Length: 544
Image (cartoon, rainbow, N blue to C red; front, side):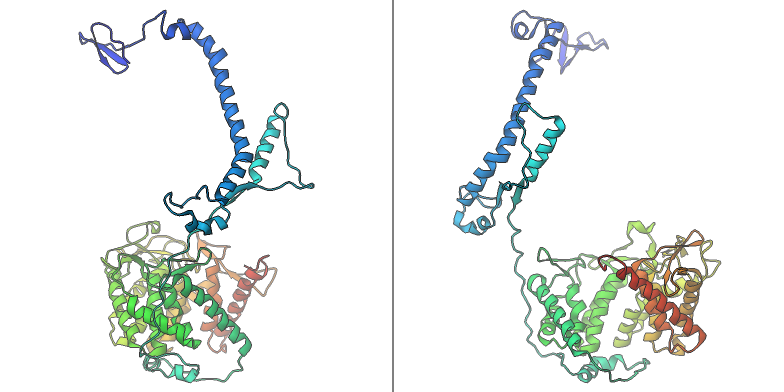
């Protein structure tokens, strides 16, 4: 309500004189002997006394009584009442509609959606306090004990929607249990038609018991995926639901194709193969990681083609490669990290430090897959796309181009695909750097270790020397182990990523026959780095 004085215009709680003067006056209710004034006090002092002596104590008593009643209800009445109500169907648990038949939801009631207290035992008596005794600390402890005694049994999460398995029917190559039959499939012959040497086969004694155990473990895991998440990228094992972490491209199926084939699991393989044929498409509004999609999806499809010779996989490879190609459309040919498979829009993550800054391991780990695709389809376009960023990075790896204090042979983690230049000075063969060094060696091996591929091996030898001289740290306490640190601020940092453990295998692969002094040095480093990684597990209380 507003009480308006003569000559003023009411404007909310403030009033302005009609004469237009700038002064604003706060309106006050007039003093009255009757109305609320006679009850609440007609003077300011009287009102303060009433608030202090009457109203505040009443409010405090009311709040205290409310809290006490709520505690009693929660601890006793509600516990018993709700439990009975749910048990007898009088109260529906969350998720049960009011108009639905209670018998329909018997499964919820069997899960005992209720609140109840644990019974006391002689050796575990609970603290109880009378109303007029106990300190505030004791009351706090008693309240905490009361809460601890309440146990909630919530209804289980509704089951995930059923998944539909694809049929395993059809006329296409299928795995067998004969190794030589697998090896001589059409795709395998075509894949080895280039300069890659075939070392032949060597008979080794097989541990059949262990082999069958590994196969059984694979079947157990993959059966669960088929049952609960077939067609999704991943299975959430606790909730038994699917999760799409790679745009719904069926990452688990594609990752498993070659394993299912090699193990001779014909039925599992056939269902997976038909899912790829019927449901895998790439016209998706999904911002895909160029690196992850290449090594997982493109690489998985290529492996399945090499083993089976099924031309369907090769068609899918070309469809995917077309969707990834826009990422390479930069001034330098060094691709951006992310590409939208539907629109072709490209970008880099904000944490790289700039709109054109890209990650070393991501643009440097594409040549094996794109090179294999070019060899399979007879089109150099794909290998050219993947080799260009590697050539650009190597061309900017001299002392003149590297950031200050970064040794030659080592590569910083971030590169500007527009400039081109390095945008930071940290070096690591762990996260964001690892597979750059790995691919320099493996592309040379994939290419047959020929003279034409010598540029790859030369680049790797330079990095291997730089790693051994600057990053590998030998333990003074245990000469049998060594770890690989990172480089920052002009010095080695004594830290080792778990991802860096690939270095042991890399040096072993680069050691060749282990005959020359350099090959022996690589092999020694491989053994010590691998032992350090083994001890990461062995010395942990959990083995993890």
